[in-house]
Amino acid sequence: MGRAGKVRLLSAAVLSQAFALVFDPYVLWVIFASALFGLFVGAVPGLTATMATALLVPVTFFMPPVPAIASIVTATAMAIFAGDIPSCLLRMPGTPASAAYTDEAYAMTKKGQGELALGSGLWFSVLGGLFGTTVLIVAAPSLAEVALKFSSFEYFWLVVLGLASAVFLAIGNPLKGVVSLLIGLLVASVGLDNPAGFPRFTFGNAELAGGLTLIPIMIGMFAVSEILRSVTRIEQPWEMAQANIGNVLAGMWTLTKRYPAQFFRGSVLGTAIGALPGAGADIAAWMSYAVSKRFSKEPEKFGTGHVEGIIEAGASNNSALAGAWIPALVFGIPGDSITAIVIGVLYIKGLNPGPTVFMNNAPSIYAIFTVFILANLLMLPLGIAAIRAAKQMLRAPREVLLPVILLFCIVGSFAINNSIFGVVLMLAFGIVGYLMEENGFPVAPAILGMVLGAMLEESFISSMIKADGRMLAFFERPIAGTLGVLTLAVFAIPLARQLMRR
Amino acid sequence: MPGQKFGPAWFPGLIAAGLALCGALLVYSGLRARSLWITTPEWIASRRARIGVGAFIGGLILYILVVDALGFYLTGVLVLGVWLRSLGASWRVSAIVAVVGTVVIHFAFYKGLRIPLPWGVLERFAF
Image (cartoon, rainbow over all chains, first blue to last red; front, side, top):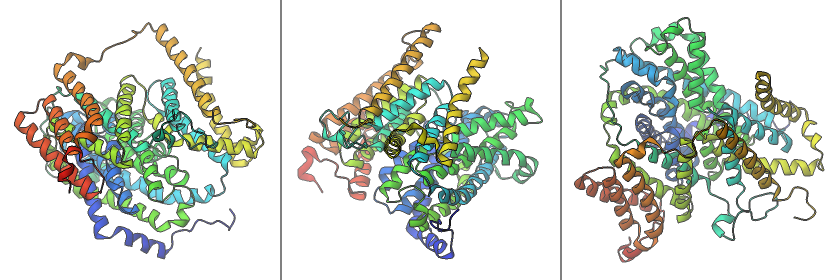
């Protein structure tokens, strides 16, 4: 590591500036309001953390950078925890991130251990979130220092690696993952914004020349499609299981001492899955639950209302949230669908992701880190309150909630460019997103393709121009070569395995 | 584009080739599994769900078509009312929520965030 181009490491001056940005009455008010919003959205089945992010974007449009990002960080952290609440009480995950252990949590409630299930969901969400945040704070600036030396060759491989992991980590048929990714890349190639500056797929339309605006598309894919799904399920009743809620934190210390390895393993895996592009909290929870069962001393108890898997997967999904911000901030490559939206917000707010943001905007970045810690600490008291208020929250009438949220989506999509075309995009992609999910096509690779399409093409074209058309140049720089081989291995290993099986 | 090996058509061409290949593979695996060409989802059997989905998509299209002419207030109340009724809310609840919801969202975005939501026929009453 050379001395030149050193990323400004944490200094007292930066830290005090960061604290001044966060501990401001307005910002604290935004954090508190976003926390309540996140808890509600997370606790109501059918409303997800990604949806909360998409709905927050138009609201944060006119806020300064730090409160805008703070509201998203806080709301998503709360929503991922709150998703556990209806798992315990209704046997329905509040967000997809809780789906992995919904049956387990409900079985605990049926056994009369609802208080323990809710308590461990909260406690290990807080611990997992703090673990992921610590990794983010330590890893991101040091990675940025390495990334300063990256050229278009390294970025090209990083993007390809990210797209590949999004496809292979998605649950289900990888072929459908590839289709989803290609649809995303196709959407990204609309407009003038390509290396040649040539209008593509614009059909002479001025709206299309600027490219398709991502926020209305994401509101469509993550909010409108979920609303449509909830409408199709309007006749399924929500039946609440009885649970006596007293002191939800009772016994948590005993559990922490009894299952430290599970908590640690869940947090490490969660952070790693979060940091891998395209896979977020939901996949992290599924994987951690499976790992927990695999290594448990009592695997036969899984599925009958056993707390071990809830601890591991509950820590995992919250740590994944923070992990996803590592590649998002350092490379501009989103780690999950939430950060895919966040990257757009970062650009709007002038905090363009990339290694230089750690030098040019250090106070804002450390302010965001501070918000992460604050949000996870705030989760403890607000989470207890949310568990106590769960019965009231889950009684919110869906036939009123869904229409009002949809009107909100319309206005939010309109607000991005003050154009009705945003609403058209939202409707089109809402239907596309719904049909894709219903037919087993994962949505996350499409979103990643849309966000990374321009970067993929640009880094490829400018690398080719630099190398004068020699493909081998992609392997000639040490880091690029390593990344290239790694990427090819990611593609080759599953193929080789399939061939061996035959 | 002349003189350039990797012009603007190159990248979309690659995507198209990939989509064609994946499409062919999916059709092949579908034929081999002898799956049905088209299946209807379960909710199609529920009248309430059918009406709801129809009203939601229809309402969105309606909104797009008429909001500039009618303005946000009338269109908002109209589509909210239709959606509420389609999901089975009572007339009373629908009327109250449609009006209050539209007014609250309008104030939040028009006044709070300064989004120029259209006034349409109510232009004279604009504030």
